[in-house]
Amino acid sequence: MTENGNSAAGGNPALPAHTKLDIQKFSEEHNNVAASDVAAVVVAGNVDETAQNAATIILAPTSLNLTNTTPNAPPGGNNSNNNGNNSNRTNTDSGNNGTGYPAHGEHYKGPKWWRHLVLHWSLVSEHVALLVIFLGLWALGLALLPEYATPSTTIMRIILLFVGAQISGILVTFIHLPDMLGMLFFGVLYTNVGLANFEGYQRFEVFLREMALINIMLLAGLGLDGSAFRRLWLMILRLTLVPTIVEVAVIAVLAYFTLSMPWLWGIALGLVITAVSPNVVVTVMLKLKEDRLGLNSGIHTLIYAMTTCNDVVAIFMFGVVISIIFSTSTLTQKVLQGPIGIGIGLVFGYLYGMMLHYLPSRNAVYANGLRFVLTILGGTIAVMGSRVIGFTSAGALGCVMMAFIAGIGWKRQEQKMTPQQLQAYQLASVPKRLDLLWKFLKPVSFALIGKEINFNVLDGRVLGYGALLVLLGSLFRLAFAYLSTYGGNLSRKERAYITISGFPKATVQAALGPVALDLARSANVASDLTLASNVLIISVLAIIFTAPLGAILMLRLAPFWLKRGDTVDMAQTPVTPQRNQLNNVGELTTVNTQKSS
Image 1 (cartoon, rainbow, N blue to C red):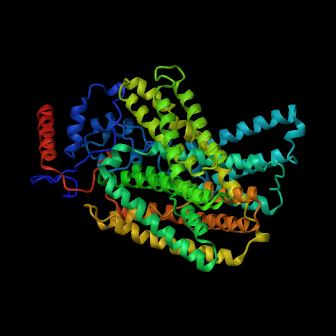
Image 2 (image 1 turned 30 degrees about the vertical axis):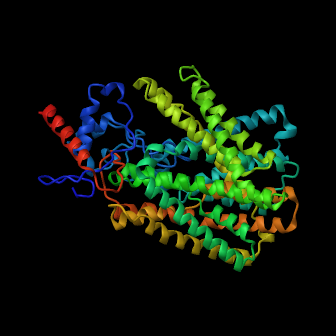
Image 3 (image 1 turned 135 degrees about the horizontal axis):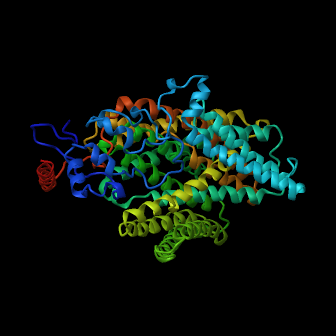
């Protein structure tokens, strides 16, 4: 083991200053393992099989798509014969991927697509179940309301757009591409064959887009980890602000000189492009967790925190800029838009989040369900209410602030629960329900942004310069993100991997891309319509270019750039450990050795 965070036998250990983000309480069947024993074994770098079976690691509080990766093998069962070699084997080496099927495709006979389907049936079955639900509801609609349920009606064409996007997303995954690309391309196809004329339902489209954005912001707020930020605040701050500022500046300057976009519109475009896709990043990180790559260097913690903070900053600043652009007030009022919006968002978010601490009570029978409804309602009031009062920037900040404050209170309440209560609570928690809601809103978001791409009115100049903007902005972002990782004890390859994790763009672009276009249509200003269309087109280019390439790079380079570690995520800060921490670790190790003997 190296001195970067592990102990070497017979030498002076250079142990991490901080341990993993969080360990859930032990399950009922492993109550005989004391928490102090597990902590001592983990810190000492000698994770045995019992400790692995007793502890479940939380790598991220929330995700936008937790089911796009192969599920983990259960923490026990077939791994019982590893005899201490768990750190050198993946979860699938036991011959079972957690679904009851062998983990290796060569065990199946038949076409490759059939082997892929069987191996990933636990994931595909969810989408198939949704399809069956849709077909059942459609059959009922044809029987009870035929005038609305026939395919020729506008409402059914809208529904079929989303269903087709979901199916396309599933099919695209068979060629190892992100599912959002299939959803996006289906929307493009839908509008270019003449099926996307939703006359009379424009407000319904806007509502669906806003709900997708609200879902993303709520997940971002719940994903903010205060303890991780306190430990890693300096590096997270650098990774969030420096690359974001550079990328936005580069895109704004290029947009001004190449596409003649005003400075505020160029900044708005840069803020849309700079947001990192949590969908792609979380999916890849869960895959790396299965392969136990990068767990002992705090890589996962840094990437999760950087992604969440980057999205929060981008979404909030986009709201500020776009509210100034479309404001019809005086210059003084435009200047005050940002500060007033910040104040309104912070106050609303704090008060509503504090209310969610106590309403409903954690002992209520349907506490999670009521919290979920109140959370969605609060986010909707924040976003739509801010637009009504003329301070659009307050909506995004209020939504994120509300979720963050509520999440702090809910985490404190979790600490008072018994293991059985905690397990039942987490299975139906608000983040889990938001993840489920995202399964419905994801095809909606990507299909609607694809729907706006009409080949008949596309400008080749916008496409060419748009691709250049995305490419140069991403390159500058990568360079300055790498510089921002200096100052810790991470290796050059680990710093490079953290850098490329900020490359994929998809989820936030799909939500923010059409926002300016919706506002421009409401204002009915021809120049604004053209500029807003450019923002949307370049957002689509960013998704197409960066989402698949970013996911491929992160997956392919991980085995070469990250170290294979234990199943425990040592979320250490890249700093030198203090003397008293080393002494405490030595005491824990001694106690554990005495108990084991």
